[in-house]
Length: 357
Image 1 (spheres, rainbow, N blue to C red):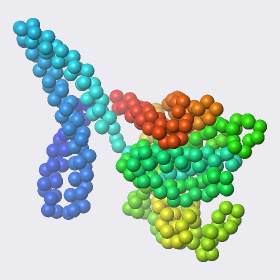
Image 2: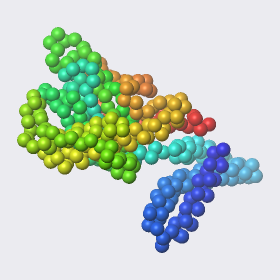
Image 3: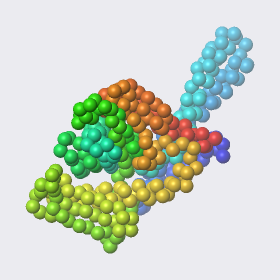
Image 4: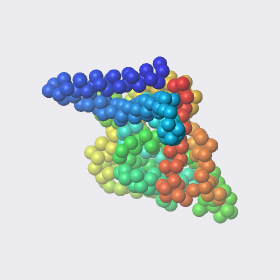
């Protein structure tokens, strides 16, 4: 199907939705909401299509004018206007093509961030803490809400693992590219000989799931409660407030103990469990499509080494797109992450566009 045929179908569907909305105004509220959402999603694309087609018609009109006009000044004016319009046309077409790309249904959702220390002992745990602070500062800079759900600390300021909920506009669309193995090269604070060590931490970014996204039967859950404990095995409190939920069909286990309330810990554990189950379903559903993709940018594979943070050189390299920035401090302060994410987004879009041609 040609681009013009696709655009015709979009415009026609938008018109149909307008008529259906008028008919559904006094009917089922669920149907009205569904139609309104689809209409709103298509409206921006239809506006871009109209802008493109208006520019194409104007270009054709200028060509006719330049051909028919006998006045040299008017011919030159038409020619100059045509040059400017011809330069804008590819941008308008590219914008429409990007808007035609299938949108990830989870892009507009909040995200659950999970960070785990990998190889490297205490240094890996310290790096995991650095990453957690980086994402917290990035979230604050974008006006998102950052809520720490749980953290397993090691005594010297590091984390064995940490989980956070990031809420705001299009959080998952931006954060999904962060899933994978992050590697750090630096001299650990515990190293007396000044040798550079290489450590790693794993990041997983999951779209927040709603209860209706995943069907979970109570009989498929084993819920254990136990006494929460802190660093060194000292008890945080004397009640069985910690909660561990095991999803028996998949073997997924989620534990929460940071809150003093068993009810709050259970609610947080269920939130994380639903997110993991939702992401598992998404991965299985998209596996065939992903296998056929020429580019795996943003695939969310947490076993893939995606980025290296080299402290001696102040360098950060994203291995998926071969991008190197000498902005390590800015990045860790959450200031430089947009530059990398923008490049990853553009690369992913380019790969998808290539598959459409």
